[in-house]
Length: 340
Figure (cartoon, rainbow, N blue to C red):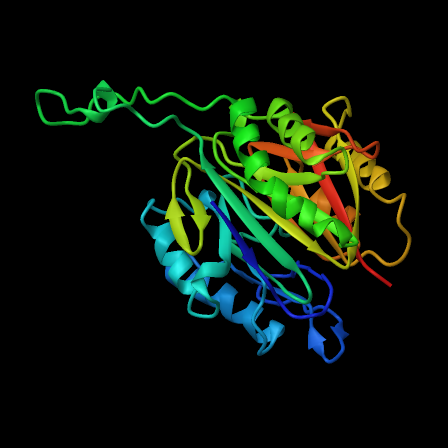
């Protein structure tokens, strides 16, 4: 399944507030905001989504965004059904069909002292977005015992098989290929991965996608822990789905990672930021971050708007443009600069 979303004729710009109850607003370009975000620390799911959505909407202005990204921290202990209430709160400000994201089991990227429950990022301004999705499990056959019930009328053990990482990558890569090639004239193309079951994915998945799309394909993202972790698609909670979002427009990206070979969180952060700050020149407009690193260390090191999550498995690109995915202290950083 694929879907193309079009926005207006301005470029990409994105950011996130790093102070509780405040909103970061992008610099005005041609009289309009390119991108804005809202943050909430409310313990009520609907109120948190509504507050974060309203703040992002107020900063973004009257024009409709091309994409709305949402991360919700599972650390607050919400019941599974509460995630839909949170999305309904966000949808009170934005078109539900534009909302994508996932739970962030270990936290949203915000200052360490901030217990942020929801972060919302609205992206617009000349950005084209294409979404493809696929199941992470094989469809059970009619006779599969996982679809049956036991004698006491309770669900039988789930024996549904997982799709192999390379097979999932092949399905999604094939689905995205036409849109990726069509966007070849865009200055910038970036793929954001949103999905569950991070501990079985990784480099084989990424390599399969990039082999199909070409060596210039760049993918970042933060995967959740379990295959039943909630994923957000078009404002609805789904499970066992993996999403790729292709964003193309008038921007450039640099990439870096902090690997598990570094000794401390500070060294990981320094290595990632240093490697991502090389090729393109000009002011850094936004930094996408996915990883397992001390939040305070990260926000102290990055002097630019920042958005992301603390996740099970960060996907990233080295400064040499090799796709990587690993555990431990890996930190994936994508530095975005708007075109001049």
